[in-house]
Length: 338
Ligand code: AHM
Ligand code: MG
Image (cartoon, rainbow, N blue to C red):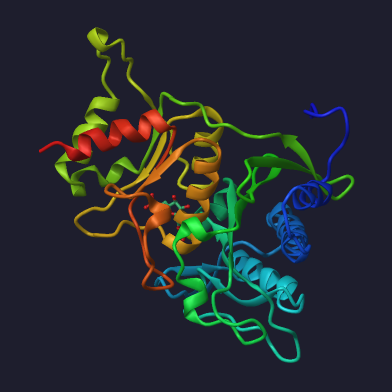
């Protein structure tokens, strides 16, 4: 793997360097990120050997969304909780797999932050060996310190996130994060057990020629969304436009990661069956939108900036249009037409 630096930078070193550049940083927040990377390494180990052990397949129970819980989802959910519950930095957690807030157990101290996560996104892809990922979002609490976190601490708009990111378990495992000062990508080197900086200051291309959407939902979409997709597929010589390519993995982490690096747009629109789309605002849309915006992209719900949506419920869903600024603006142009 070619290194972008003349020195080898681990994620730990990078987090510390970022912390030193921010005024008044106490190190608590850096510790949260560092503790999280341990959980990601453990999940990565299980994902990588999932084919060898009896870890694949469903547990037989359904989660809060009514979907079958996969064994690895349950494992990842527990690993993150257990890696973070005793650190003294969090006052609560919330996961896509659990109906309610996950409290910090006695006798551990309640800290300044809350953590929200989707332990294994794209879990329907587990059994067919396709990339999956973990998504996380960190907010500073708004209720008094020292007490257990409440719903108020979690229901904050996305622009309040102080860090967010994802780990993608694919041909190689990568961790991509932002703490509000650019986006950085680290590739996991299993031989030394470290995430090493491989993608410094990621910038999304201003325009791309890939659209990514579950087009099987075409007939359930609003006609304006249908018109955009029809347009995306066309060669329009007088506009100098060539037909865009379609790429859809069905793992948001993988689809958005590709969009971040190659440009283009990822969409999960509302439809006549799901009026608010499919993706969860707090566990999926907000963290991925924060990353993409920090890389110079845009993230909208079809009417407003995703990061400005005021959440009302933990498991709230939102339509999502995220990617290169010019592509997202193109989609919005179609959505505004009659
Ligand atoms: P999950 O969190 O249950 O895995 O669901 C979210 C996933 C996203 O990764 C992906 O973008 C989307 O669901 C795919 O949905 P669909 O199968 O409707 O295209
Ligand atoms: Mg998910």
